[in-house]
Length: 116
Image (cartoon, rainbow, N blue to C red; front, side, top):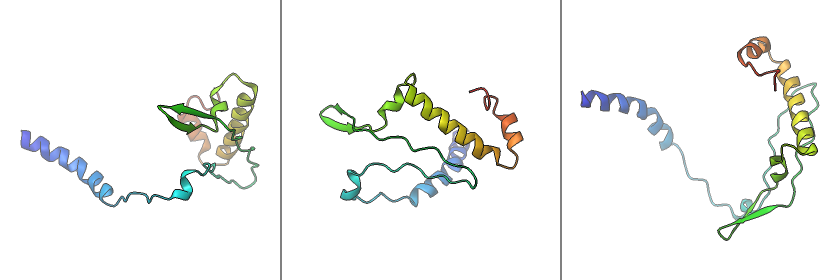
């Protein structure tokens, strides 16, 4: 019984081990360590994307390590600028998803699609 269990577990782990064997460690690029992260780029034809989030100069110091947090302002969910940013992102997302084939099936599958 234990041998069969081990075989079953091994069968499930084999694909993961195979994938992990192809992974390599990222090189240490000194130039990228201080660079600000770039926002993801999504394009849909005929849809105007909203303005990107504003990056602000904010950092916490944790255990002596300075940790930049340029999007900290988005954590204040009651702030007018955060609510406006979320609404613009939601409107953009809705307009992109509305163009998808099968959009009605997606809306039926996701109960909170229009409920926000």
